[in-house]
Amino acid sequence: MWLSVFSSFILLRYGSTQPAQLIPTVDPNHFGADGNPCYDRETLAPQRCVPDFINAAFNLEVEVTNTCGVKHPTKFCVQSGHSAARSVCDTCDARHPAFEHPARYLTDFNNANNETWWQSETMNEDMQYPNSVNLTLTLGKTFDITYVRLKFISPRPESFAIYKKTSLDDEWVPWQYYSGSCRATYGLPDKAPILPGNEAVAQCTKEFSDISPITGGNIAFSTLEGRPSAHAFEDSEVLQQWVTASAIKIVLNRMNTFGDEVFGDPQVLRSYFYAISDFAVGGRCKCNGHASECVRSSSVDGENRLVCRCEHNTQGADCDQCLPFYNDRPWRPGTANEANECIGELAWILSELFHYSDNVGSSWIGVTATLFLTSGGGLVVVYDLS
Image 1 (cartoon, one colour):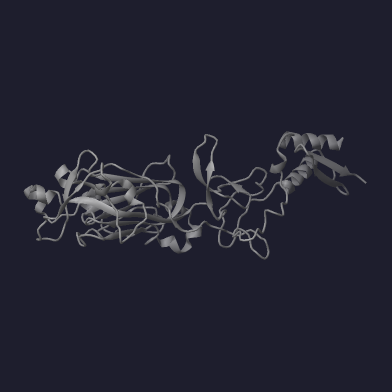
Image 2 (cartoon, helix red, strand yellow; image 1 turned 135 degrees about the vertical axis):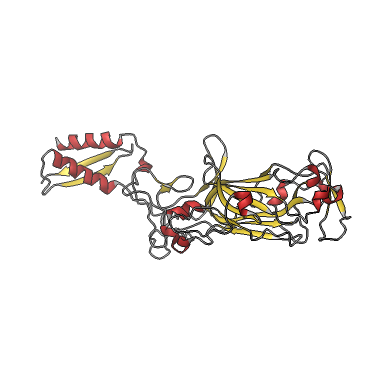
């Protein structure tokens, strides 16, 4: 009688056709594989693991809203100082490889001896505030971002902004503003303090907004700089979300000038444009402490996507869920002190059985229950009443 009752309970709760591989098992090949950083080499115990730190932007496509030489060949002149002659001019022409400056040069290999760069049209083509240029980088999955770095061939902008999306379905969120006119351009004070309890907020700074240097200037945005809880990052869900991005957008709002553009001289106007040789994003593929690498995986629709190679009985593109039948405790990210691996439900099933028997008023003193996994993926419970 009891065997029938409990077998019915098992089938009702779990079904009789669950794949056998979804039932909690001990796989000796899963733990302690040589070189697997997700498990301790000596004890084989699970431990937090993370993918390598990389330039997540390298060789990715950047969508830009303006590029020189696309509509027609564009003449531009090189900035050489406040009062120096600007007679050194060249042509940008997207039809000829030797004269093009396309978006792919933003994320290609940055060779100082053979520098390539993306370039916009000039102020002579009306490329000036309020007309802006957007550079949009889609990373392919979520990353934990440490910094965003831009290296300029032109002078650095007077005003520009960095935005991010946590997931592709989200709205753009301001990440950082740079401006010599923070309040006038973005309605924000210069370098307002970031306070505890309000750390996921974009700051505006006039740093890096000067026209000098004329070329070769860098801007590096550190996602955690100035955030009070950065020292306790693992305990701050707010900052963990703050550094998470799947897409990044640079909005170039206003060029730096010497003020001589007001005279409308075409030669002068051709010397003002945006040019960037490197767009780098330092970070790690986001796997929540449950994977040491990200790999390309073909989805059901055939699209090749970047996903975490999950360990610790987790699943999902970011290892942000427990595998079926490994939900004995809620999913949690791995930390330096605790792997927080997902735990199988076999012990939970037994506790449910005992709980069920209590509900029907049965005493389990002296009763032994043994669970067997059938080849078809079902469970058989055998009770020893002796």
